[in-house]
Image: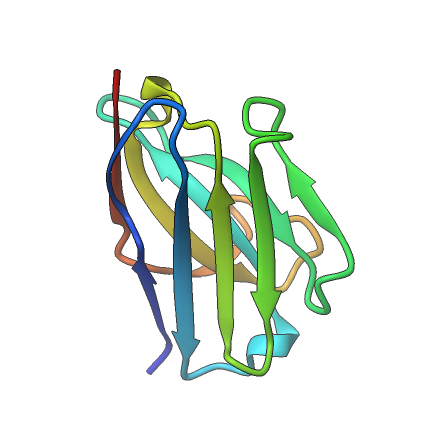
Length: 122
């Protein structure tokens, strides 16, 4: 059984930082690109960042570029999202996903975690 489990969400003040983790099991982790998505109430799930299988390439959407950093540890089967300078508009449920394509998207993601809530207060 493939399982992705997010952790590290919580309540933080605007300008604060949070580090999310996603532990994967049941798959060959190094064969998958990994991505982080988020979904706010009433909005569709959107891509935030992705990282290639070896960790050599990363992608960020403009809204988080310079504030968020995606990384992975293939020895621990874990992908991370370091979030700095958080804003109230970052409030959402954050999901990790695994896919076989170079660029992760909703359409190409094969597996999803259950999500972790991030709330940023002003």
